[in-house]
Length: 257
Ligand SMILES: C[S@@+](CC[C@H](N)C(=O)[O-])C[C@H]1O[C@@H](n2cnc3c(N)ncnc32)[C@H](O)[C@@H]1O
Image (tube, rainbow, N blue to C red; front, side):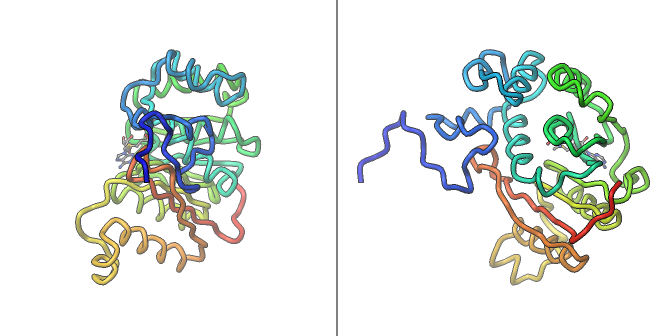
């Protein structure tokens, strides 16, 4: 079989295709998507230049130079996969960092009327990001609130039934998101990362056969299922990050917040 032309886009499996920005499926060099460089006006003009709401938001983020290309793309792709399952009147983005994931729910999901951005630390750029998003989507202004708090204290701060979301809550922070979702009878979507090197409760056979990272998520899945959830695994495109597994957990019926 002849080698693929270097300028030809790689063929992506359906699971690895970009959903929010399908134009990215045709990029010849997808390494750009995992860049830690800030999304720039120049890049936005090339890739996100339509009048759509999502492109307007990308242009606003680029104007402020507040987020890296990787963070923006992975967050949009995570959101695209979980938004319909997770949308609720209230959504809490835990270990939110800049808070883009929560903001996307405020911008794009009409049903969501309260978004709590919770982190133990508030990066300077979060306020700039909220301002940029508010300029494009003024309806989010009264929906979004920041809470500076440790996740260990979050349960007391969140309303019952409020959906729990988190992108890259490192290591056991993803487990704390699960604890909170179970206690609050909430829908949950997490994109775990930085798996601990030990203390995985999965049986040795599972750890050996599937590796520690999958074993952690298998164990998390059993834990959620035994608490009454139906769990699905999804992926964001691996070209953005190898830590691309999403766990989405849904209760049959959840209280409104
Ligand atoms: C890898 S960053 C992810 C940030 C963001 N969700 C994203 O996708 O870019 C992990 C975040 O967890 C926060 N964090 C770490 N320990 C925490 C804790 N105990 N309680 C709350 N937030 C914590 C950090 O401040 C940081 O913003």
